[in-house]
Image (cartoon, rainbow, N blue to C red; front, side):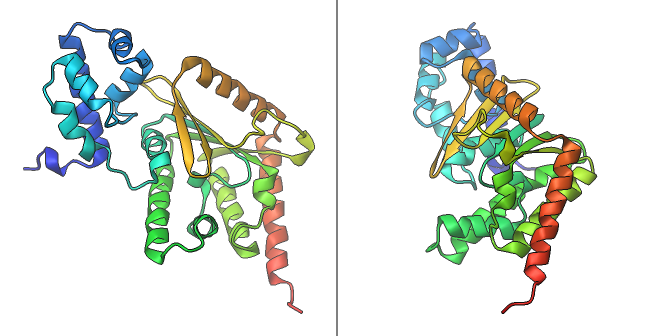
Length: 281
């Protein structure tokens, strides 16, 4: 019989989240009341209970003290926080796996869930040109494992808005970007994802600051994630997530329709394929 030690980190977080909920209810506290004691929002407590957010090392002893749990959360949070992903993205990747819907804007790059292995490898090498092959392979394997979310035929719903710059930037060279665009077109054709392209002609837009991801859940408040090189922030403040949702809605409103977007993606892929097969001087 398998025991708790055999649980992977995501399953362990769900188990610990359940224990957190039981302990809070035994103490007669609402999520909001516990959050006030710990100087976090009630929705943050709810996300820890649902397993969509990790119990961070500085939070674990405070939970133990507030709920009279001895050292339970301190002892369990280390294994529960193990992740294959870079630290700045770990929480977002784990939440992504539990989301019912993901809405993402890709500015200069194709979003990770839509990347092919060759495209992803080129991105990692550009970010870390001196990294060892083993380090790049580890990052690549984690990203491709994330992309397997799309192996499920219906969930989560993925709605992506791609800036035209992401299509026009030949990451990895013409053959690599062409193959990635064909991959996206296939996913659209399978009705697995909804993709819109925000054309250059749209001019200024609501997310000029960079990429944006929104995640919704059945049993927890929504989260948004913003990222910059080497850092990322997972946000649960209702006013902030509502503002990011409005930004995303404005992006969709200014983007091409899904059919127009598919036509442009296919056309750009064809241009790259033609470029790749032109005779070299």
